[in-house]
Image (cartoon, rainbow, N blue to C red; front, side):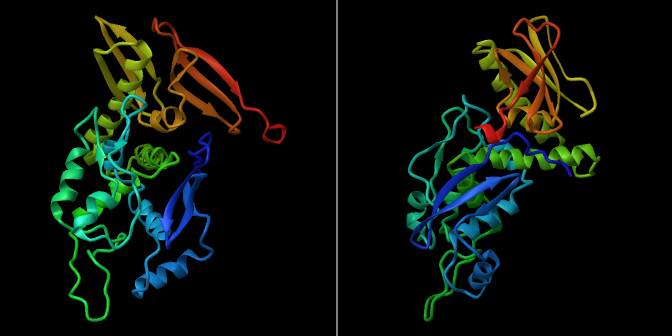
Amino acid sequence: MNRWWGGLAAAQATVACGGDAHRLRWEAGDLYTLDHDDADSDRALAALGDQRCTCIDVLDAWDRHRDDLRVLVLASRGPSDQLIPQEEAGWQLGSAPSQVGQQAGWWSFPTSRRARRLVSATRSSGAGFAGWTSYATPARSGSAPRQRIPKEAQDAYELSALLSLGGGLPDRLVATVAAAWAQRLARGDRTVARARARLDAALHGRVFAVMRGWLGAASLASEVTMIGEADQPRLTSEDGVVRAELPFGWLVDVWAKDLATIWGRFCLAAATSDGRTWRLTTVSPDLGPPSLITLQLPDEASG
């Protein structure tokens, strides 16, 4: 079993659910709720038209987007590319169309235009944020027929709200999506060919953001080449251009684990056999030969 999540700390956020504050926790590769004993029963009640459960809706949305490449396009590329909510993001249910801007936690992106298209599309659809159903308003006796939300709009709402979760959960979603595609690349999945350009862009954007901050260069001439997982990663400079050759799995093994730079060095690769001793292949800012750094995490029992 590929334990790609090794080295990633648990993450937790709170959402409003049924009038209470409920906890969502990500750990060991999965997102789950701490405040619902029987998630399947809550799903069944929702399917029968009873009141929806925000926690379960979030879990279901997470599952729908756990290999969605748009997450890698829309999510933050690092500390220099933070997503800033215009208002407090909240998973509110049954909002009317006029409330969407307040309820859904719309985003502004000061460093990039890439996600504004998502926000514009959801705003212009005129559909309400209705707790991940395909209808704008809940059904009630004697009420008007429910307005069906186009799948594209619902997807956009879900992505926007997933990326507005606190507690580091958006970063864990990025890691989840990256891990799914790293595994597809490793096994030569036929879906990779169609996704290659987006995979390249996801890797390049994050490598570039790291290198720009690491080298202290506001403008940086760089080239990033995605190599195979078994190939040797490299970071070199030629004619003023910094060239990185890295596998897509670098996003999971290094970037997602906040190991991209350590002790002033760029990390090309990170490996562990037990989750406690890590071997990092690193390069100094002068882009000399790689050096190995060994990290030993403290024993959990000893604190």
